Structure formats: C-alpha cells, structure tokens
Length: 274
Image (cartoon, rainbow, N blue to C red; front, top):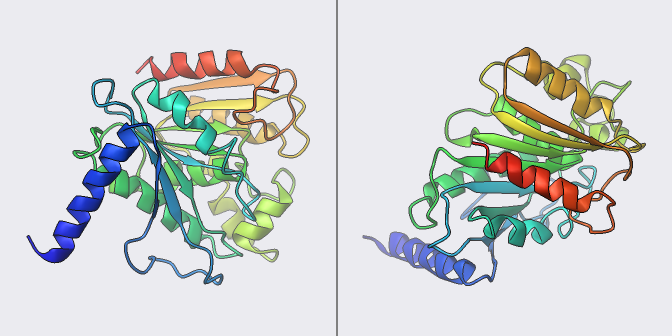
C-alpha cells in the first residue's frame, strides 16, 4: 500500500467512525481536479456524510441534491435537515453541495455522478450495498436528480430516486425560467431543451421514483412532476406520486408545511416497500 492509498484508507475509516457517531463529516467531493471545470474558481463541490449506526444499517444510501434554481443551494431544509430522518431508518445520507452551472450543464451533472460513484467506492467501509444507492432532489436539485436518473449509466446510475416539487422540463412553456437559464444558458437551443426535459428521456430502465408536489406551487408548475410521473407509468417504471392540496414551493423538511408528518410517513412507507 502506497502513501496515497494509506491516507485515503485512513480518511475513509475516520469518516465512517465519526459519521456513525451521529456527527456528519464534511469533505471535498473531488480528491483532485474536478472532471468538469467551473467558471467560478471559488465554488467547491462538497459532501456531508451521515451514516446510521452499524447495527442499524440496511445497506441503503441516498445522495441528496438541494434546490436553489441552479444559482444557490438550500443546504439546510433541503439537505442537512434530512440526515436524521434517513439514519433513523438505517439509511446513509450524503448531502451534496454541487457547483453552480453558470450555463455549463456538465458541471453539476459531473458532481452528482461523482457523489454516487463515491458512495459505491466506499460501500464496504460505509456498510452500503452498491445496488441500493439512490438520489434525491428538490426543485432544481430535482432536475439534477432526474437528469442523473434518466441520463447517467454504469456506476453513476442510481437505483431509485426521490423528487420534491422538481423542475423536470426545460421547454419554455413549462420550465422554471431561472433554472433553465442557469443550467443551459439564456440562449439554449431547442435540441438542448429537449435533451434535458427529463420527462422526454424516461425509458423502461429508468429507476423507480417517489414524487411529491403541492397543487398550489406557483414557482415550479406541478405539471413538471405530473408529466414525469405519467412517462414513468407509461414505461412501466414503478412510481409513487403525492400531490398535497397546499404548501407552495420549497418546504422541504420544514415542519411548517401542513402535510409534513403525512409526507414523512408516506416517504418512509415507500422506502420500506422495496
């Protein structure tokens, strides 16, 4: 074992022990130079790793992508606040601070793919099964998560995905304009808009999904998630759709969301169903 391997092994062991003790570990996503270069040299991709106690670990893990219109990240109520929910169920949670695209879509995509690959690389040390790694996203983070679910392959392809009030389409009549412009640029071509309208990219091998929306969401039209569910259903992909009467946009883990408890129970039941 060379020095680099020894350092990485020591780091991974430290992460496992500390995160299992209920203290999330923050670390840079990329060990070296990121696969895709960002125009913002100060924007660094990071992860916060929450691991359940070894005796409770089910082997499942989920990478969490907060929302923020591809301009910023709601790291708490759409990220770190979910750590306890998952670890109590024996599920590892990896909160991802992905880099902003600034019109370069491959930047956040490469970060999300690397986060999934990281989990699988460390599966043994973190008590995770390589075939039970999912991705979860909120709003624009939901677009990123559904992009990974419909576009990524091999070690970067998730086994399931969870979407909260997601941006799905990049088509002008239904998309969230801010997310569209930040992800593709404000002069995106129709071909690109179609390619990253993820309802149009669903196939029979798209992983199973759980989707939650609010009927009164005026920021990201509920039609985004509904269209995605329809395509999952049409392609025989197991999916669960939950539309709450009210709540608007961006509630995440906030207890002020009127249907917070119901939402948690429904998500927990779905996670236990497979």
